[in-house]
Length: 106
Length: 408
Image (cartoon, rainbow over all chains, first blue to last red; front, top):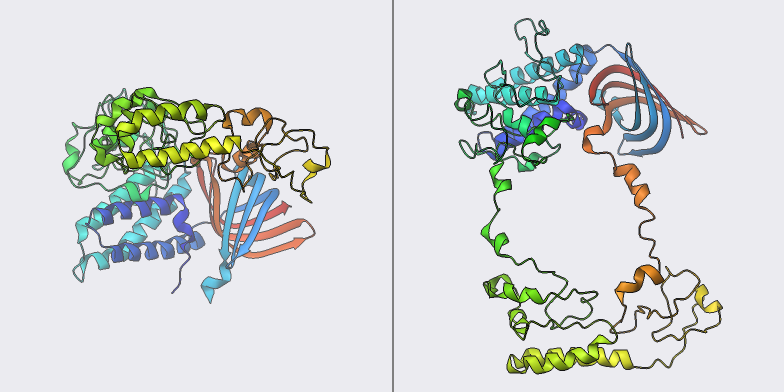
């Protein structure tokens, strides 16, 4: 089953990747096993986001760049405003990377 | 910094992943449970240091216990107080000392039991003494690349703010990486050896003092001819520049006559060529360049070089500048005057570049999600996203659904 490797770029994904890199470099973990862990992370993360997260966010901003390539949308927003359930954030520049949700269910 | 809900989700994900790969670790000759625990510990540690999960982790109920004194939400660690690690593997004071650098995966190669030496001059307080060092093989001082945290107090370590990867081993980065580098003379590499060099000497700085450095093993220099020339009275010939060539080559030739003849000949040839080029009168006029506005003005200037084909030239031709025309075999650009005569405008785009790259990695805001629909009407874009992780303003926010409205 294919997974989105998208979430490996998140904080939690990067922490895992680095941990695995350290362990593989020092030889206590085999690369194949590290890849298996990462794949499992993809699945677990996707599932957790579906089931455990219930919040809704609205995003507004000026679209500086858009790109659609390989079924992945990449937006770069400027002066974006994020409104969540209880929080609100503004950022000067943010990148949004979004994969096609339909690909997972195929 | 994470809220409690996102922290819980992360902890849940970690637990889920670990439990699902446990079989792989234990069965079929895998590395074993201890390695898996180590992996989990390291992972959680990094997450805590990144501020993505709040410690301590309450595993019994899988929900966050009373906050107590969460360590990680406060990214600035005061090194003057004893480290209050509450869990076995929390000995990461070296991480507090060395600000983490994001995306440094390849560099962290801790070998078990090696280089626990902290940086010289750093605040040493809790690090080496902790008995926990032995429990985990070496991890905790591994750098945490991700963190967005400031770690401003970490700058106490003698002003070494940066640790590229592997904070657990500061020593390789503080000691000279190799004796080879120490021996390398601090020579301006633009002053290449004379032979074979054509136009690398622009603005070469005369460094008569460099003669001292050539007593070093010649193996460091690829061209053995180089050092001896400098022994000729410590004079480094300059081949660029108009007027200097004439006076220089005489001395050089004489001085190095006693040395390598082959080098001499090359040098002489070059110098001669240099001489010649400075004295060759240009008989052809400016090349009529259809796209060059320079020639539209009357040619009242005395061009010594081929007419200017440089597109960067603004309409006014530089009067005394010998243009670097490509056909000329030995262009005589005097680089010292470039700023005055011909604005290269090389800084024009710097501001634009900074807009994109000026933010350091600590403040790179990123949203990773899946999209359901992306539409556009004229310049108005709308999208619906789902299952996303937002990392903005140093915070992690998760969402199940998101709607975006952007104006292009």
